[in-house]
Length: 156
Image (cartoon, rainbow, N blue to C red; front, side, top):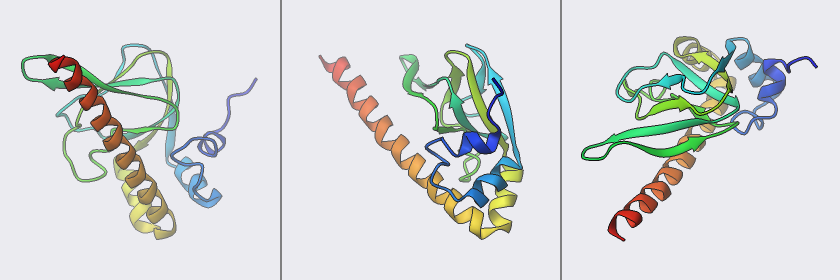
């Protein structure tokens, strides 16, 4: 069975499924497919990432360094979720370390090409950035819930 094209994958993933076919085709034109194996580091907390990743299949764990506790898993991301978005929104370092927990297929976008596409074509850029804002908002809510759970276990 042939692997789906990037455009076909983008049509099914949460982050990109509601984008127009024109926008998904433009994104596919600058994307690369990658396969990660369990233990591969996608991004490191505090270090600059040069790529934005969309998880096509598999899972990536996000860990943060907590003083006095070391690395703490705050979230695990799955298909359709975006990761390493910090440089796209102006942060110069990743907010967490992302590690593949199993074989994971990602669609990678080089930051420079991604930003150039969004800035040069507002019919692509606005909807993509709107979806990125939604993804960041969902991540914030998920992280807050995870942190509440962590603190609840600490005080018990």
